[in-house]
Length: 449
Length: 99
Image (cartoon, rainbow over all chains, first blue to last red; front, side, top):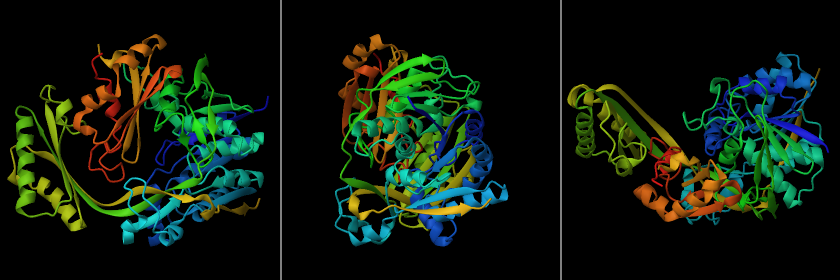
């Protein structure tokens, strides 16, 4: 039976680069997939593109391409990535520039667009926001960008057209991996079982090192070797959709039933209905078998008909956050940090900062899980006060950090290491739109020899 | 005994909803987890951290439970004021449960 090997080159925008090079050089793979687009990244990229029409794509794209393109060209590996973010055209041009500078032509770069539905959403103000039930019109002028999650179909088309590199904007993460499987095996787009199995492969692979021992270690309970040299995963997929997850021999990390189970359920709600643009995937009957060292076989994925509509992420301006931090240590650290906290809360009232929301944390005590879960914990040697507030203006956000910094000369004894920051918030909500309103397009860019 | 002795866990986030897996190290311990780690138990343990509902999905074939907690992430990672805006540390809170 025909088999295809896919590797994951990145699981988020800032991910390590060398594991992708290792896969391209020694992974014996046919496709290398880079998933680099988090929920709100695309809205931030849209803002960057507005300021500079040549910006708005992944800032590490050129570095990643320069690192992997030589080995990918040598070994016949096709690259698929959503690093195009809000500007796939500019990202494609950047890939072409890297290829030219390294003398790596001929190269066909497919640019996938059509996910930007901002104008369509502006014209359909009646659509409902999933999280709140309010109409899209409630975001009014605060809407920054709307991007639909595309499925595998346009990437399959690009591969059919002979693309060596496929650059997209918003595409559902697992679809980046499903597409080469559909292309290689000729799977029918309405074979829901196969679409479900391919989506399962994509879901296991999309976070790169998170299935090969990254984000897993817990010393004494779950030990993982050589995490500083973590190997990124390879999926060896058969034409019937069965998959073995593995990695380059000698790389760091660990692939076991346990690492695969953790990743299988990561960001999943109902395991029997994992919705993507391609399928309602069913992971509930999956079985996981260790086939050898760092080799895990995953079977039993399935699926049902794809949803009738596409999910759209709505990036909107949601005011500002201001934050300040300062540390206390040694005897009495906790009581001085508590005093500092109470002073800042009172100061913000006295100077009248209009706060939409305020949060007062003692890092090392209650910042992560709140006061209830940490009530019985012993007193720490050092404590860091953190004050974070939501405001309507940047100026008000800055006043929060200033009040924390002011504790240096006006607060309890021994405060040190004060930091402050203020930022605009681009938040994300979602809506659903009919599929026929979205039409993905492909533009092919040729780099000559 | 702590849940940590029998199971491992990972947290994921989508919008304002968190999901926490609880996975038995050994298949034979799954039934014990299924009986002890109920949705209500998780809700009680996390207290006011959960502002919405707790749902549980059972995956006996994987020896795993998947908990879905709505309105738990301060509006979601894109707008939360929390230090751990993803809620990634929630898995460690669950493993502290007494079994």
